[in-house]
Image 1: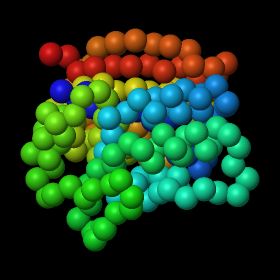
Image 2: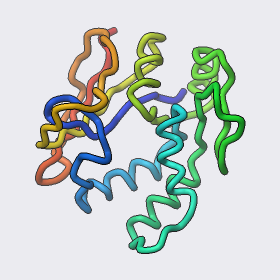
Image 3: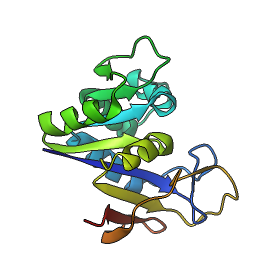
Length: 178
């Protein structure tokens, strides 16, 4: 059975904004390459899936790490939750309208970890009690505004682990209390 986790880079004041945060260090990017390479798949909302499609095509100026991440991302299955998209790209599938049934099916059919992309989708899956772990990659930045990591109230959580990833970023993992 697969484990669902929601993990994103977050500022000290609780926001996620890839455009406004400092780009990941080489060590943090390596962490994400390795994590992506081990995924059973990724579950995205429409907006984040649209952003991640960047990795579908090689880009001018990429170095070795970018090619490695792209290869890892391309090989992992992707499932997209959207009522407006008519089609999705390579190795991706649109999920049906019954989110709970679809995600329970994915958890039952796959082994390993499935990442959840985007705070709004994570909020919906939290309401359904389907997220097994929340991973905050805490950056020493204060954005002052943006999309909050937690888009809505969460059930009580317990600390699972913490790990310093690079000189500035700590990953803090939480799981819902039983």
